[in-house]
Amino acid sequence: MSRDELRQPLRKRSLKERLWSRRPSAFAATAVALAALMTVGGIWAARIPYPHAGEPIVTAAIPPAEELTTASTDSADQPDGTAKPAEDVIDENAAVADAPAEDVETVTEPEPAYKNEAAIYISPNRPLKKAPVDKVTENSPDGPLPRISDNGRKPFDVYSQVTPLAVSTSARPKITILLGGMGLNARLTDRAIKELPGDISFGFAPYGDNLQEQVNRARGRGHEIMLQVPMEPVGYPGNNPGPNTILTDATEDANLTALRWHMSRFAGYSGVTNYMGARLLVTEEAMKPVMKELKKRGLVYFEDATVNLTLSPKVVQQLRLPMQRATMVIDSDPTAPAIAEALQKLEAEAVANGSAIGTGSGLEVTIDTVAEWAKGLQEKGILLVPVSAAYKGRAT
Image 1 (cartoon, one colour):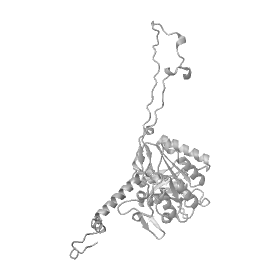
Image 2 (cartoon, rainbow, N blue to C red):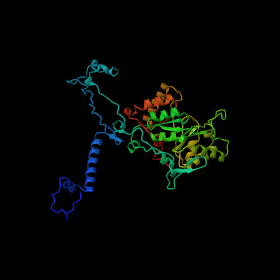
Image 3 (cartoon, helix red, strand yellow):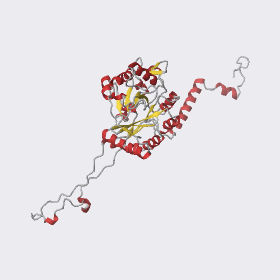
Image 4 (cartoon, rainbow, N blue to C red):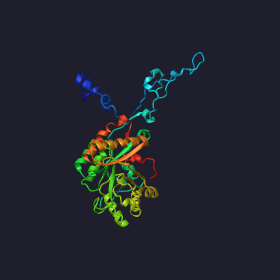
């Protein structure tokens, strides 16, 4: 509030005028407001009930000390130098339970090294960015195609899940599961997206509706995506995977045209997996151009366990195309007890070999059984990892 100092130089100012003249500057008011906001925000953040915020969190697991009881070391002779009577000699075949507790040597099997590792906690659903990503996308008349970017980034690198270093370097057994057939049944696909942990990977068929929208919802929940490409099985065309199947007797151009049609159905996949293909995968001449195209476009190849005989390892080695192969189909018998038993076998394989890869279908019973099984992996010291984790460190 202004005053006319020339006309009223001696007028006594009112309280309101004096307070107004002492008001803080705009800068000081802003500083006070920011300080108050930061204080309130700090108090709010400290009271958020999220024990694992900022995941992954590593917690040291220190096992309790174990007491080792040693056996008795009595002399074989009597104090006077004579030999012990025969009846005092312990029968080696006697039951251990008959011996006094203090005379029994307790021998325990050493635990695997990973049992004493730090516990690893990671978010079960780490979101992935929406696809397509422009720098690894080629526009075609049919739709988006994957490509290697100008700076060398590959779709495999861009669309894969980031596996924490603590997980990839851990000695704990690791299990990878790829469930295929996604996108064909929107209800079951939505259920799998919502109920399964993000490290369960999905294989999407190229024939569903609204595939890009479904793929991006799955990626938003952390699920890695593989494209299922139909390949000629034994008994074709009576046994037919679908339109534009890759065929053994088709020309190279025809097969590449069919492959590109499949690849253009949606974007966001880090690699290609076979759908059927028992005949194509033993025909090197027909298979090689397909694998070359995957290599050219910066993808990886994944083969399920439905095909027993395959020349894929030979072909991909020649092309230096990264490949992984599953060892088990978890729902070949699509019942809950059989799937649970298959998952136990997958666990045993992972413990014995360090890792195991299984495949299955997006059936309701498979989704329910896998979701329940995954809840107990942390207690068993087993890590669930996406498909891409099996390729890390390999030549590309």
